[in-house]
Amino acid sequence: MALTTARQIGTAPERERKRFFPRRCRMFDMTSKSLLLWRGCAYREQLPDEEQCIRSLLTKLDVEFEIVEEACCGLPLYAGGYRRESKRMAEDLAPVVGEFQRIVTACPACFRMFKSIYPGELGVKPPEVLHLTQFLNEKADEGVLTASRFRPLEMTVMYHDPCELGRHEGIYDEPRRLLGLVPGLRFFEPRFTREDAACCGGGGLLPALSPSLASMVGARKLAFEDRVPDEVDAVVTACPQCTLNMRRGLELWAEDGSLMDLRILDLAQLLDDAIDG
Image (cartoon, rainbow, N blue to C red; front, side, top):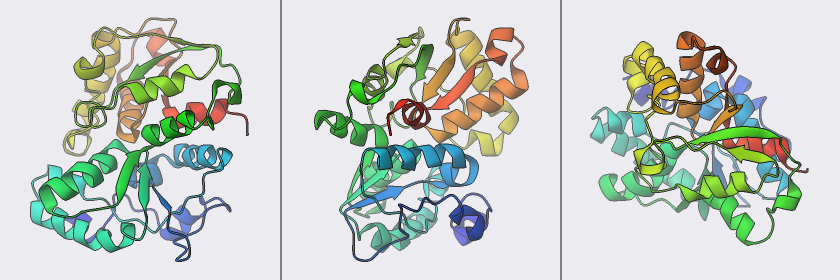
């Protein structure tokens, strides 16, 4: 598989990826090893604007973090049945991430891989790992992230529960609490939510194996399972694969006028837009 040699999903050359790095971040500074921001392939290669929002949000909260030259975490190989190859990738990454005390990632797939599959299935023990929503909830508990930090956003949103974050790792309340901090936001709760949330079709390697079917599932979820009403301005989620697949689904399959105008937003994108710098 190409992934076993390229060690990452996507083909953007390093010089292109480096242009998105903010001045505040440092590439693997050996003198500071407290917090690693793990970006993940989907954010790095396909959602650079959303990745910038993640780093901007952390910077506004005065969080000091490091970034490294990343390889894929190995979840696509693991999900495809290539256990030996995914274990080899995990072992190669272990000394890199092991230099840090904590890992924070906004990608639920990377989060599940580091937190559960590395130690539970592959015999590799990484540092403590948090999803970005968990880390931001810590900042809320510390009084660093409060409602007073946000400007009002007069809009109605629906939160979509990603399968990797919800069904696999049980994170449902943390994203909703963060959205609840933003003044003016109104919420639409779909009929299938949390444990019963309809999958968007963006996981399980479906976009790679059958992109047309994956995008169709994403559009159908919004139109039929969720029955998103006209008054909803945006669907917010905390997963890059969900963001990509629902956007693609609406682009290819949306026939209803209200769905054609529906925005799909990354949670960090919304928070970064609303927070006072």
